Length: 133
Image (cartoon, rainbow, N blue to C red; front, side, top):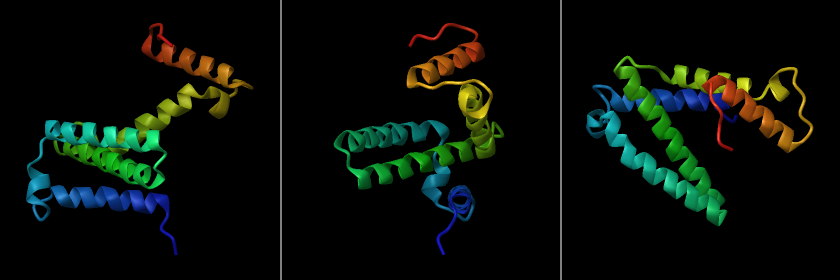
């Protein structure tokens, strides 16, 4: 039976917690928040290259690497009592819902242009300033 997405995500979160634990990986445990920047930049560049080449296997791998880093950076922040991966997920799902009232609310958009206009209007309202499009 195939694992569900939520189960796999939870498994990844638990793996990262273990990597950073006393019984985990000494190297992973030593890494500070700033140390992950070089890996994040590298993985995003590799992802961009995969997309440009339409290399689906590479895209899949690099998306996994970026996701791993998101979870790892969130774990480091949790350890410093800043926020958790739950907070990250809550933030992004709330933002997507707010910026797409034509999908999750009662606004209407029948073209891509109308949808984009609504998106930017919502973003401007959130930020309290005009957004350069």
